[in-house]
Image (tube, rainbow, N blue to C red; front, side):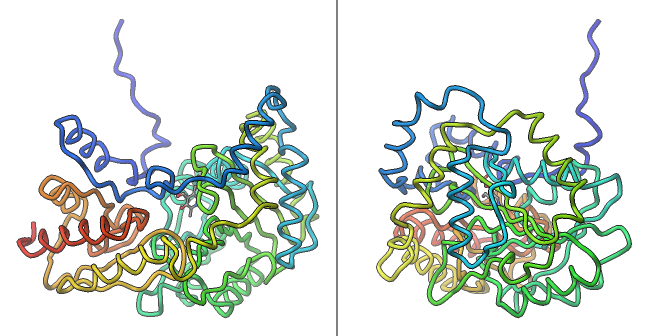
Length: 406
Ligand code: PLP
């Protein structure tokens, strides 16, 4: 008997457009022999950003010792290095029991929300967001509620909006700093405001700080756990971006604040971590050497550095297009420009992105893919060489010059 196999209803509200229909279309065009410039995903290695040699050497050297499962929280050497790393950043209340290693931050985002949410529990997620947060909250049975980040204020979270969206069902606030997709690096004042809202309402703060070392100009990153040691928070970070080993799938989560009150939740985290046995062990060996080694990311973000040059090239090229504005990113690997809706009346931004892809062979992601409520933004990855970015964004300019709305 043949019965149509349907996906679970749990997936009804789950969306992840960074690798969604637009990427499928790009693959189809590639199969036809087209060369597609892919500006859709923050994966440094394919753009020639190589991991520091010492990381690769250490992982290879440790491979024979990485054949068995590790402790489900992770290798002690990695957790000790993470604790030490946070001590140097002014956080001295955590120890190795407060660290969980995961297969990338991604696994820990889903795991931590699965352990937290009952059906209908709400999580405050920024708009725009890194869409895995919204998707994982939905998948865990929760209800993601989006708070606005304010483009006119450098994309800082609108604290009044955050406050207005807290309800009796709210359990957590997600704070992505430095931000994907906007490139904002939040001020201490904003972080203090978010901490106050968490304190007043007994909310958990989930601080995704995976871009904490990718900062431009004079931007400074303040770890949430340092600023608000009295708030129960989970901090997420890993090796995918600053250490350029996204394929290793090495991430971690640190718990800080009043842990006694969260003992039951932490038992839930431990249960889920035990169920998946452990994170990829060879990659866990990369953590100690990465955190303890030379921080070569600095050469890429300081004046003359490739990432900074590319950020500048992308913003300059975007600003040269009539009706396109763009808040200059102060961190991370993305720009999130606005296309003036009067000039470019886009009703369906996914369709817009597909048309741009088909005519100019450049792949970007539509703003609604990041839960931005309007169809007037795109996200562009700033990983390609400056000339390639200028060329690809020039093609966006050409496309827009002939664009008459859909
Ligand atoms: N969090 C943010 C804000 C990201 O941008 C990404 C990847 O792009 C992740 C988490 C996932 O990182 P990982 O490779 O550690 O799973």
